[in-house]
Image 1 (tube, helix red, strand yellow):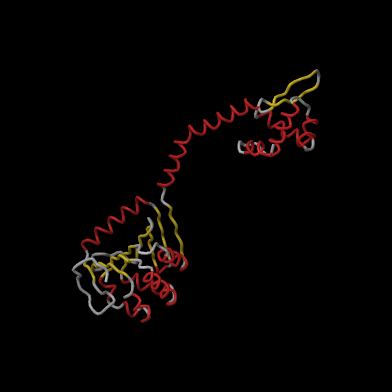
Image 2: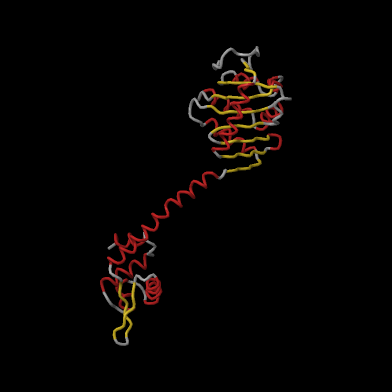
Length: 274
C-alpha cells in the first residue's frame, strides 16, 4: 500500500489524499466518518481531503436513501487519466525544451565591486584544467592598478599556480606596459613571471586605447577596472566567440614579444613558448 501511495504522490496527490483514496477503494462506498476511521484521521480533516478529491473527480458522491456516500473511481479509470496527463506533458516537451534553449541564449551578467570579486576571477583561472589557455588584453595603467589590488603573497600564489599547472597566458599588451613593470612588483614575484608560459603580442597604447583589462576564459568575458575595484563578467557563448574572434584578429597583426620579463625584447621567429 505504501508503494501505491508513493505513486499517487508523484501525480499531485498529497499524502492524506492518497490515504483517503486507498481507504475508499477498500470500503467501495462509505460515509465520511467511516472513511476517516479507515484512513486513520479525524472526520474534519477527512472531509477537507474528500472535498478536494471530489473536485479532482477522483471520488464520486452517491446517495443511498437520505445518506450521502463516497465512492472512488475505478483504478483503471484513474490510471488512464494519469496516463493521459503524462501524454499531455510529453506533447509539451518540445516547447519546454525550447524554453531551455532560450534561457541558454540569455547572457549571465555579474557585476561586483570589491577586491574579492577580482580574486574570484583569478581563482577560477588557476583552477582551469592543466595546460589550458586564458586570454587577456591589458594596458600599463591596468597592470599597475591590478598589482596594487591584492597583496604580494596572493600574487606569489597566483603566479606559482599558473606556472605549475602550465596554464598559458595568451596576451595582447600595450608596449608601454613593459616600461617599468618591474618597479610595480616585488623581485620574487617578478622572477615568477619568467616561469609562466606566455604567448604575447603588443601594440602601442595609441593603437590599443583599451584602459584597464579584459580576460577571456570558459565562455566568460571579464571586464576588470582595478582602480575602482569593479568587475563585470558576462557568460554567453555567442558573445564570447565574437570577442574571441576579435581578439585573435588583433593578435595576428600585433608584434610578437620574446622574453618580455628577461633582458631582451624583440620579435620571435615562431609562436613556440619559451
